[in-house]
Image 1 (tube, rainbow, N blue to C red):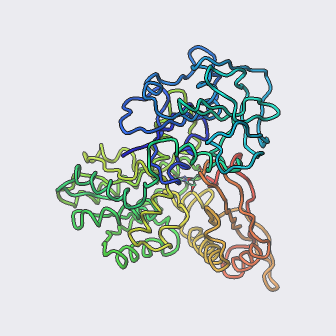
Image 2 (image 1 turned 120 degrees about the vertical axis):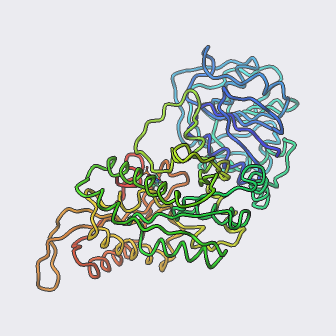
Length: 507
Ligand code: XMP
């Protein structure tokens, strides 16, 4: 498969570059700058930004094999500076940082800027800049602060941008990336059927005549994976869904009915509600709750699969951002904020081989193939839901009463979002339960009861997010319904905190 490689120098936007390329129907992969090995089928390179200074010995550099390949190169921010530096240019650090919107003015009619206005608003985020060009290079855009805001060596097909075309704040950013793609010997034809063919081949190569087990969470990734694998494997696929009692209203039933009706797949639903809820009695610490839920999940799943014969593979809906984040590059020092729940460790414990057909896909690609194989929007476009479920949405101790009220409140909130046509414009929305007491008045009586919080965020990557700007009347309507319809709730609040500093989930 022909591809464009994104070389990661540690920028927070690296993944976005790969996503933009995939959105242009170009297959792309991210490689850490110090792990550039096989360049087979690589038709171009985009060098990402990064936190270092390019002219310091020991800092990340462009691998020689990239230059030797003679394929087109687009350097972005640090990627531009290191390209200039290694080609013989000079980099300056004048101690002045440029961050945010800047206007650039185009020069010398570069094909990189075809179809773009003379003066463009772009997004900058840098300290160093290119001070003098290498031989054979020319300036193609300038800003007040950066006379060399973009350069090219047209005959070598080398381009550099001081700004970030991959972020949405840069006007015409996608057009610039598409113009670069045109310089590469690659067609914009990576689509859902290519992806499905590739998965077909992979499964044929690996789990050829063997049986596969899949842990279905009900989320988009594992549900689409179940459907894709069922089409390939038929009865050789067994799906198990563990109901930990922390699912939303009718969730287990809905997912199972949908898969049965739409594609004929039968899922084994294991009811383990009592086991989970008993283990959670008296536990209030979020990390402890997460660990208990994760470990109990593994215990139940393992026990359940003992009853199945001849399983050799465990299929997981791991997607590309998980792979990039867990691999990182040799310089990344990501901190654990929350221990996310997954089925990590299961394949080794159960002595199963691991099948992860989505590990090179972004979520929007998983959605695309979900639609292509006929799954309804209700499944494919649904908001993400965390593995530990409502267990981390009841703040503090989890018990059946709180879960019941939370399920009802969450159901009201999501139903009304759909009724008002607001659901699909939010990235993730949910209700959470706060066991703090607040005074209210219902009819002539005083009540002293718990509080429901509502959270809705908009985000492209779930790493940063903003609260959705929901209409006041809408929030008021949902609040009225929740307090009127659910016993034991006296008040509703709406969380408007951004991420960072807050996270999306409360626990
Ligand atoms: P935070 O709260 O870290 O959440 O801002 C970011 C996204 O991750 C989801 N999330 C999880 N997903 N297992 C998951 O599969 C987990 O343990 C988990 N914790 C948080 C969260 O819902 C949001 O979409």
